[in-house]
Length: 272
Image (cartoon, rainbow, N blue to C red; front, side):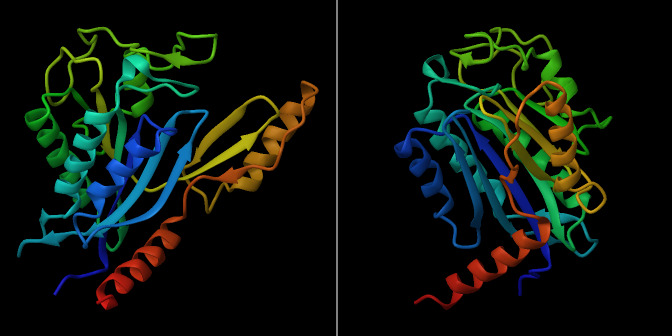
């Protein structure tokens, strides 16, 4: 009997938000396993980027250590579909990226622990390095010293646009990486670099102005909510004579994700 109170969530960020055939191929990989559900997805054409939120259970041995999660194999299948379909040399968008798959994030949900998420992140990272021969960078609790994502990205030149001042087009990484990855080779093909952490689930809020978007992650949404972010952005924008539209969320709260998962997995089990 699977304990549905022990859940892990995977946020899978792929560098494609416009090509429906590519996105369909990535989603088909998820449908291979009925024990996994996509609880939320977000496609952004301007960023040319998509995010899938997947959830499944985690099993433990008699000592309490995590030993199995269906996400491990399905994430590899999703990655293979993305690698086969995306050519970063032809890619452009208003969001930086490290590779065809830019980021894979694992979060504990319900009664699962951060150790469970760390175990899965490191297992998937090793699989990626071995199966796809791609560089993988661990961060947050999955990294031995807790190295943060923004540090890794700055070291790799992630935030420097190379087209029209605020766009990223084509391949932007050196063939030999300036930092040694945690898994995989230091040299990279022109599609594949991945960052992979485990961390607590966060809410992402976007405040829109006429010609730009400002995105942020709410690390402690119960303490500092979207309303405070909205008010601060409006105040700063007013000082520059700018108008700000109402912000919106691009993802669900942890509680909503668990509820959505329970509903979807129950519907799957009751289907003939």
